[in-house]
Every structure is written in C-alpha cells, then in structure tokens.
Length: 131
Image (cartoon, rainbow, N blue to C red; front, side, top):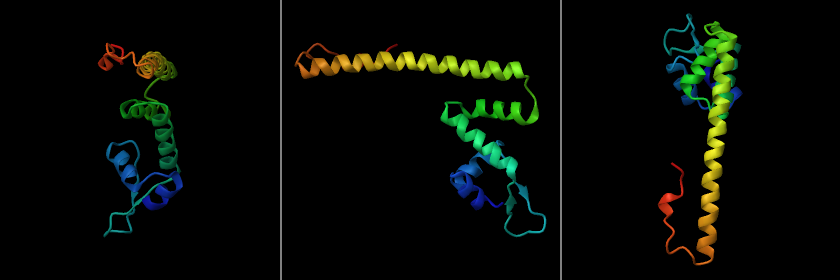
C-alpha cells in the first residue's frame, strides 16, 4: 500500500510515517517499475511495526526504547529476559512517576485550600513540585 493508504489505515499523518521511516523504525520498498516519484510500498509488516510504535508511545516508551522493542520483536537481537527487564524497568519508572504526581497533587490541593481560606500569605507556590 502507498503511504497515504497506510496513513488512513493506521490513523497517523504521512509526516509521522516519514519521521518513523527516517529514524529507521519502519521501511517501505521502492517500486522498481516507478522511476519518477519515488513511491514506496508498505506491507503488513510496516502496519504491524506502526501499531507497536503507537502502542508503545501510548504507554510511555521513548523512541530509543521503541527501537529496542522492535529489534526484540522482529530481529531477535535481545533475549526474552532482556525484553522482560525492559518492561519491568518501564513499570518501575511509571510507579515512580505515579508517586511523584501524587505528591504534586497533594501539594496543589493544600495550596488550593489555603487560597480558598485566604491563608496563602506565607505560601510559596514555587515549592509545589517535589525535588
């Protein structure tokens, strides 16, 4: 399928697909019979890779981590244990972010109450994020 078809099928822009292709995360095959417009054909493998990229981004993986995931899935570069370690590390990272966001939320709630009760003269809003 052409890039426009892939874009519609997956629900991402052509620009996004080209960006991922420039990073080497997906690839299309140039049509040998078309010499003028440099059209590329994207197969079901490109669809699968894009779906993995989008899902991984949704759960918080960086593009570098996604590259590693794609290598694990499609090129068997990493072992199953390495892949499990990568997922466990992401879970730990998310747990830490949740703790941080809970602290931030609690502090914002405290400041809001102080503001509502006109008790905020000594409240320093610069200290609403944990260190």
